[in-house]
Length: 391
Image 1 (cartoon, rainbow, N blue to C red):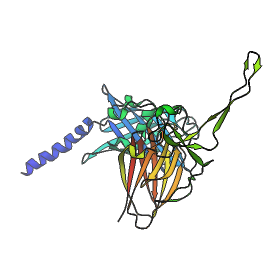
Image 2 (tube, helix red, strand yellow; image 1 turned 120 degrees about the vertical axis):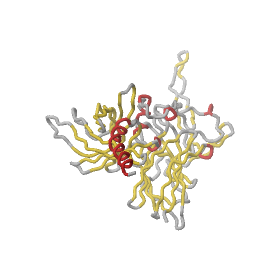
Image 3 (tube, rainbow, N blue to C red; image 1 turned 180 degrees about the vertical axis):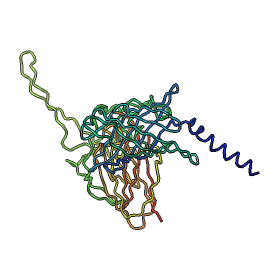
Image 4 (cartoon, rainbow, N blue to C red; image 1 turned 135 degrees about the vertical axis):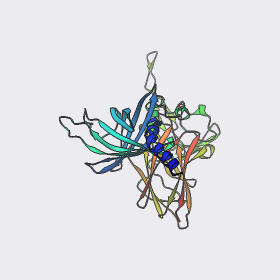
């Protein structure tokens, strides 16, 4: 009996490295990158693909400084050397860094694959290449393979840049053909009565006192330049500003006579925030457990900044109307009445920007705890996050 046990133990020890070597490592990996010099930890994602036996990939580094979101998207070279996975930068594709990145500096990571209870982890050191001007930086990487592509910072960037099809790890369902951007219309308004907004131009957001706190269940004041009046178009009531835009037609000469200018009144239609919220399906993104009596929520764009505009609702009430997403923070403090044990936060896409769908990053601060939730919405679907009080 003891002899059989020793044989099994020896076989596990001898053949485990071979099993790791043969393991499929393609997929989405999420984790952190720690810099020894700055002693800062950055969010880090990589996507690994394989075609004809060759491994390739992309990486996404993400961090926030002074309410400004920064990212870098790179192409990767990937090689297997025994149980080691060597990952090297192969060019910066997109970024919004405040300074121009130095040329000739590449990151090389030597990561070890570890598999425990079906959880796959890549860990190990990294170093940057030495140049005439820069000494190498060092640090460490921690990555865990994930299957939830909705909570990715990398995938939306690849999709919006048209690079998603180059990645075998992204399911075909997540690379759906993007519809043409359209502007949400009030219920019952015939599409032919209103000219659609240009898909090239970002939608303008209404100023909403972003730094002011708001209580759940109470009306939210919105600063507007004018009090909107109501008018009917094709039988449907819509908001129209009291001072309609006027366009003067230039004088023209007809048979040598001068014609006086004609003033044409053109109504400016203002759509209510989240006008079709009840007509769209609701996708539950995540459940967050909170313990404070107030939550601070911050919005960013989660991909390329392309004019995405959203409205945020809590328990059916609009608390952040028509917010234009960008790399800069849009912040609101939500005060929770005593006895509030749960609430539902809904992200409503007011448009699709110039690169559908509408993607965003929601950062929720509950005391010292911080949660990062990524969402995607379109003209048929809202994203929802449920908050439950921690007991």
